[in-house]
Amino acid sequence: MRTHSQTFALGFLQLILPVLLLMGIMTFAGPCGMHDDGSVSSCFWASRSLMGLAIALVLIALGRLGLSQSRELRRGLNLATVVLGILVLVTPGGLIDLCMMQTMRCHTIMRPFALVTGVLVSIVAIVDFFLVKPTRTDS
Image 1 (cartoon, rainbow, N blue to C red):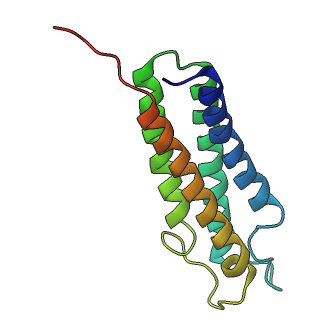
Image 2 (image 1 turned 90 degrees about the horizontal axis):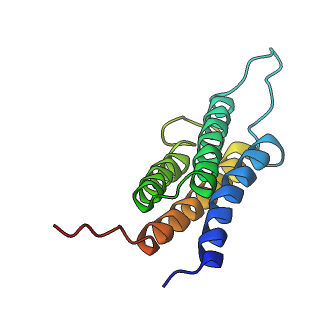
């Protein structure tokens, strides 16, 4: 049986992980800097995409914590979180290319940070999905 503290802990993790992703991308795990001519690399756009995914994950987590009394709704929000966590995994270097040099900060800091965060977000959502039992309908 699932306790209230387990529910809160998983919901809190689903909220704090994307907040950390967003703060990390905006600070220490951000993309490479501007070029001398003022242009930006493709890793800049990968970071912007990660920020958007993090904001979507935060909104889903807030909905899960505050609005989801229904078990089915919580399970649906968990599935959406898994999908967005996978998108966090594949965005830097997969969906959006990073800089050409493997030694640049987008390869050495941003991508591993996004990979770890995406995996953790997905794992927490999968665990929560299986802990939330669907309601039974007797026909």
